Amino acid sequence: MIPMTLAEIAEATGGRLHSPDGTATGDEIVTGTVEFDSRAIGPGGLFVAMPGERVDGHDFAARAVADGAVGVLAAREVDAPAVLVPPVAVDEPSRVYALAGDTDGSGAAVLTGFAAVAREVARRLTANGMLTVGVTGSAGKTSTKDLIAALLSARGATVAPPGSFNNEIGHPWTVLRADEHTKHLVLELSARGVGHIAGLCEIAPPRIGAVLNVGTSHIEEFGSQETIAQAKGELVEALPSAHDGGVAVLNADDPFVAAMAARTKARVLTFGLAEHADVRGADVELDATARPSFTLVTEAGEARVALLLHGAHQVGNALAAAAVALAAGMPLADVAAGLSTATAVSARRMAVETTDEGVTVINDSYNASPEATREALKTLVAISGAGTGRAWAVLGPLAEMGSDHDRIHEEIGRLAADLAVDRLVVVGAAAQPMHRGASRAGSRGEEPVLVPDVNAAVDLLRAELRAGDVVLVKASNAQRLWRVADALLGSRA
Image (cartoon, rainbow, N blue to C red; front, side, top):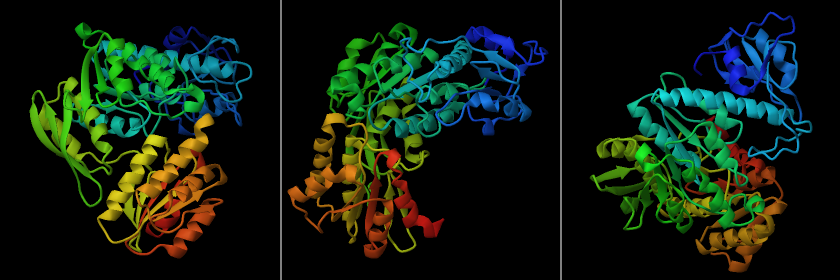
């Protein structure tokens, strides 16, 4: 974060200074990081006292200051120097997500103040020449964000969120990682409702925005793909005009995304496999571990790219990243070289490792949408097909599918059968329709099996896996199915 006094933070948030002994002057300068976890506080930091279901950050205010924090961002008086943010009515319409356990509106008030500090920092740094890039989509956001950050970092200091820090907490936290040396700020934007992305864009207005796809993630909350498209398109609506340097990077292969060209004042730059895409992938090939190579075709010429990432779907992510980098002024040769050397950064996303027993584990357990699960199954089959072992898919339930839960899970089960996955292991009662779909489709290998929990899945795998087999592990993050992959790879830890 750039240095700011408590008085400046109070002005940015509309809050007021407070200290239990009345000694705070407002001249105290925050020079460290801004944290909502008191355990992460270091010298010169600012502690954001976030209320939660189990603990309330206000109770840790004094401890945070004792550990080095200059002050606290709080909704009520605490036993430490603080900026007290204005209250927010509990029933006030908001474009931020509701915090669990926020019965009195203090959580919304702190979030609003947190966002205001980030907005002020982003405003100052943008005026100083920092480029902000926003990325959204139903699938692939994190991988694409990581690729964009890898490319842009070659041209200057770049800040991007770790993993999927993409909501009303992770977004301002990431913005506040930027300082006067930051040249590029790459942000991943998520939504669970209409208005959320627009709200995030107000914190750090992007100049380049990429929309990857419109799928069915969180459809229980959105209600339809059309509503999801409405929400995702808020990113391109927030971009400046083409005259002011705004660029909307849109997926030419997704009709919902392509239609967003009509919703933006920015210059439109399309990517995809379609012949008419401005940044196009051609001659796609996969190696024995499903790492794609392709020809990157642009108006500036062509270049061959060989990704170190796994899965044919990574081509689309790479094309989106290439389009963003080109829009930011990177030469084509540098873009191709950067894509070809970029490695996976965020954990549990198509991570491919081999156990000491010779079993290949595809750990894609961080989260699961229907679209990502289908691509993961295709990657599993591609990798196993290059060897002599069996393809195992260990799948758990997908979250927030609403009334489409059974249908979507049955379709995934049928796809596993159609792709000739040798053994489908379905974990948990909530995923039972997946087992039913595979059974009805008719297994091409061994019969699919339904197990109650992670331990049962691990026991089955340890008893039946043999050298050369390939195992995909995937489910919604709440299922913690990564424990299966960890158990299989435990001998390598």
